View 1 (tube, rainbow, N blue to C red):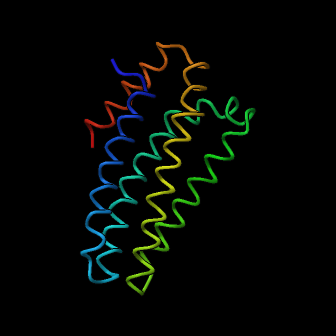
View 2 (cartoon, rainbow, N blue to C red):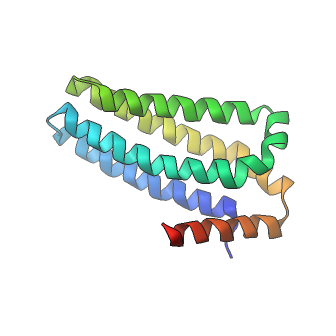
Length: 146
């Protein structure tokens, strides 16, 4: 069994690998449209990850996270990340699209670090190991269904 916090951390590692590959490709990209496709791809992957966080974890811990001021921060960070990806996808100039996609990737990295350092410990302190494992099982079932 895997705890939900472990599953989300694994997803972070996978997404970070995708970010690295995207950043390796960026200098070779010749049009803003290509950057748009990459931005939409990564945005889609992050959207699935964010849905898992929102629906499996944060909804359960809204009160605890709100009390500690973390919930508002998380929602703000998700909004900022989405804004950067949308801006990158709609940019008309190649240099601007690249820059915005790089900002989106960095904002996502910073968000993952914040979650792992500040939020996941709260989740593990508030919920029992059995609950964390059940949420991990729900995550695994969602992965199988995808």
